[in-house]
Image (cartoon, rainbow, N blue to C red; front, side, top):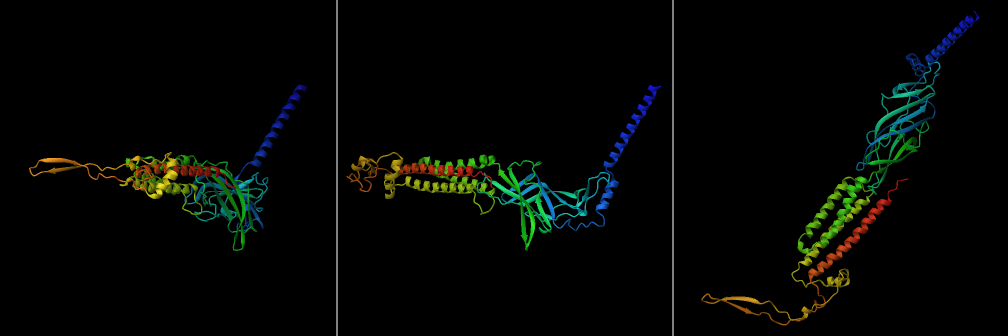
Length: 446
């Protein structure tokens, strides 16, 4: 009997505990469960007749902004614009939008459209595709029970960017997205950066540019004696130079070294002029192709552009020198070497060609003219061939040419060797300086 009574007491005690536990779980679930009734009551309570969306929340409203970068769509160096995709996270405190979650079923936040609530008037100050305020009527704002409002505004931002192409293609570019308070002065609304850098958690890499670093600068914009708060989201991009090394710099250096080979071609080949003109035209076309990728600005002159212009100048000089040298080579009187060229030959050309000046003995001997063959016919038509020596005379050597034993063809060959060495030295030194300057300039801006 006693054992049965204890069993009954234990049974009812267990049943009571189970019922109490179920009741607690039911009450807890009902308090945290979202219902449209509670949500409607919150909207009615905070957005009632006392709420005016045209009145700012406080005397000075502090607005925090964060730029979330998704991708860099385009960086047009010629148009000097940057196109990027992302969204701005804007947050502020509105004491009028508060409620007690325990009264409204535990609901801690609600959503509303931007036409129903006060929001800061913001614009992208450096936009090149319109200056309309950011945001859209279909975007929802998240309102927390503490009065914190969060506003995420996605968009495609096309902004102006000052490109510095001095060290193209090993260059860094600084582009920015400037967010400015348009209607409210700094006394009424102040913009603060939520983070010190741009948020790149969801950023997709670009094929031409690498996002090197970013920062946020807080500034004030003065207009008609009034100051407006501004945030500048700066992003530093580094150009991927592998493509340009393989397709621009390498062909450019190779074509520049081809200019010197014109002085190695024999003058008898007849290809010297055609070769140097081909090289000149190739460099001109290459300069045009590279120039199309550069912005049409005179603020900065790219080092590569100056190098191409120099190489083009050297090819033009090589064309002029080759033409004049061929004129010397093809002279009828091979002894008619200009006096200044004779002096230059003794001072420079012979040393470069490792030659010494030896006067030929033929100049001191008696010159005999060629035999003329005269064919005469008599009256009967019988031909007779007579040989006679004409102009057989003793000639004294020319005083002007007595000490210069080289002909124009030989001097022309000396000049080709001289200019080959000279152009090689100048072009190699210039190319090395060009490459070193581009290499040491690969430093990001501060």
